[in-house]
Image 1 (cartoon, helix red, strand yellow):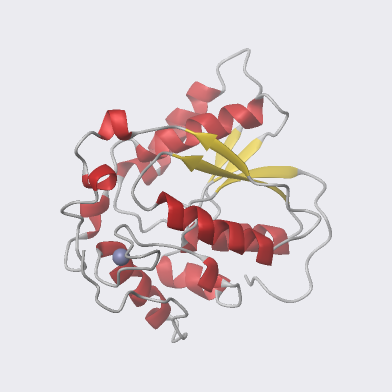
Image 2 (image 1 turned 120 degrees about the vertical axis):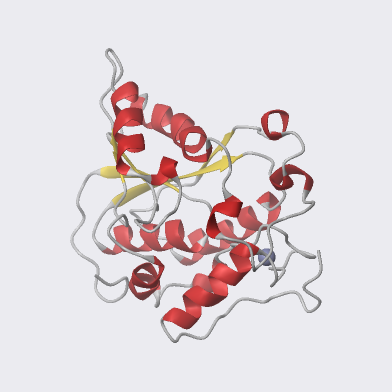
Length: 231
Ligand SMILES: [Zn+2]
């Protein structure tokens, strides 16, 4: 399990990958390319407060990873402000801080919403697998096997083209994923849910998780955090 060095032979098969611009899905993409996979990347644009920074980082990451096996990013729109209303992910107010528990950053229906458009894109264009960078250590019910098995079954109802939903990182915790991706250009990933002037705030739940992630593998954190860390 590594993401650097001589890549494997081309697998000849294309797999869709959902990207958020964060560490896990970016590392998944790098690892799949390394292992010879042809990859069709997706980003779902939902209008949440960190979208601009996330998309900017993702564009840089994909540029850094450019390879014949990497298709052009497909951006799909799925606005959520009408659904989430006054939620902190839309308003940017009362965002869970660095002392909040992991489950404070749950976004209702997140994985179902992300999967549905990308999976249908794949099914209507002959791609039979959509991979997600979901970790086994995720605290959320919609990141576990029963959820994905049921969603996959629904998507595969005839006459829809068959599709598999895969979670290649499901056996790993955050530290394991960081080890996998330690040689990737992770400075071009974005995790913050309360960006300040285009930078990571350094004070929110996700920034705290990001700092811990780099510390867990004794790697230098290349992230530029906002100097004031205020939100
Ligand atoms: Zn932050």
